[in-house]
Image (cartoon, rainbow, N blue to C red; front, side):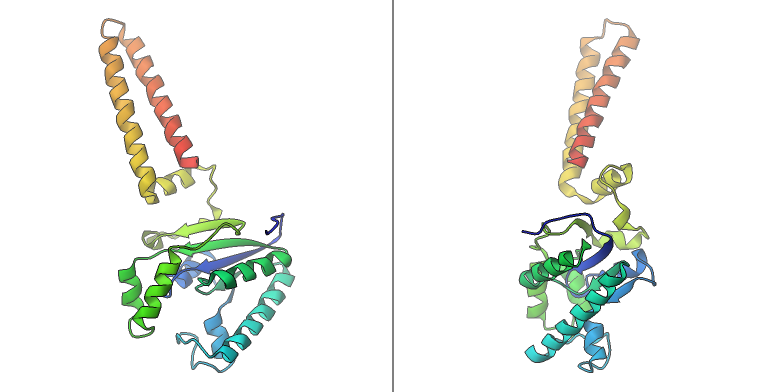
Length: 239
């Protein structure tokens, strides 16, 4: 069990399939000055690959060296107290849990950024670079990631890459968060449409029932029904 406490150093831990758009999100939302720790970059630094863009999984011994260097870099950055990014797939649940435990021990505030993309897009971007069977396995894992040990989580969908928004600033108490949820949560959109239908039905019934009453009373009753509907939608969004 990880004990969550107030921390200073923010660490953005990218999670998602190769080709999902993790690096794109980092560039667009965190800026060029943010330090990035990446196993691909470390493999190149250690001479295991010919370049940081090469997608390659080394031997057990090579990956152990990569992990050792990665932990050294993370420890150094955490000691400076400045935000940084861990830009890897992070889809191995055992490795991810171990990484989070160590980051919390270092006093870091861990923000999990889950970047979701369709299988069609993933396959198209990484075809020929990674065996399809291995890529499919990673994509399936990305749908079952446990985010419960993070201090904060951000979900990024494919459509959001067209927006230059710092999603780390989203607050569940703000109207922007509510708008973002409405746009990206299918179940939520369905529930809100249902609430709208119920509200209109009640307004129509109120109009029929109060037909003999003054129009001001009918408008007042309908306004009250709409406010009730809006409160229900807001509670659903923030819930």
